[in-house]
Length: 105
Image 1: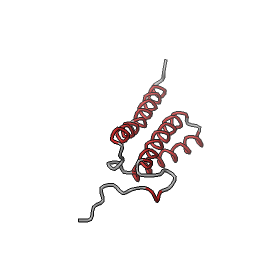
Image 2: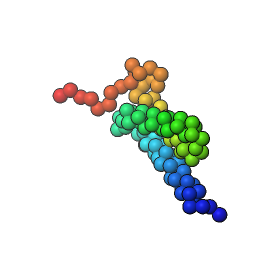
Image 3: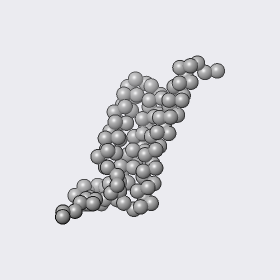
Image 4: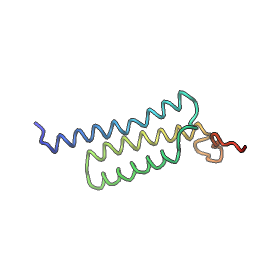
């Protein structure tokens, strides 16, 4: 049987992974619409960077729940960011990224 702490760790890890997977819903929407104009690439860059930092912390502390959640978040956020940027132009050449909805009237 689980102790209270073990059960809380399991629930928190499960919820964290599900929350990380939520980024893939945004990616699915972008692919369906074939545009990433309604998505902030800066947000997903920050989102992914945060997971990277927490993953490094989890690795240094040897904390398995943190490692699992943050690895999932880094992967899902990174893939979503890559899709957003690739829909704006070449993923490897930022100069090709197109601005979304910028009009000068």
